[in-house]
Length: 133
Image (cartoon, rainbow, N blue to C red; front, side, top):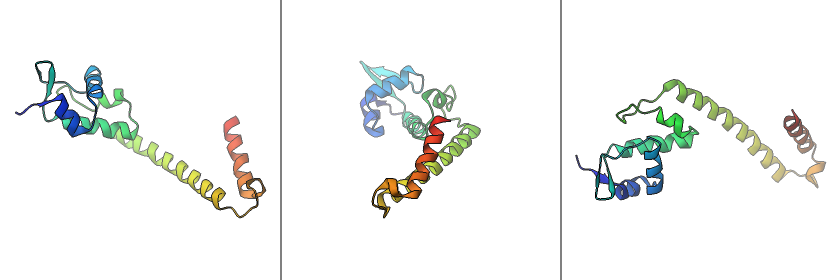
């Protein structure tokens, strides 16, 4: 097995060495050995880093991501947690789509000022009710 040093892992994954050391500290990845002062990793570490990056992008915490690996570092993805996160993201997408629509309307509204636009005023009232509720 050809080992990869921390510099090579960093280059291939685009993750800075400081983050790799932090992931190691958190138990997400582990070097196989050291060559001098440089950490040496198995090539499978790149797969682990891909899962970590994907998990972070999806909004999982590092603690949640650590539960996505067996003790030997192989992936063990929790399907229920992934489905729940997908549902969470779907709700967020809907909210952001509605916000995008509002912003597009405000940007293109033919009213002289935004405060003269009935739709904008109605949406402001709704937004204010949500903030105070």
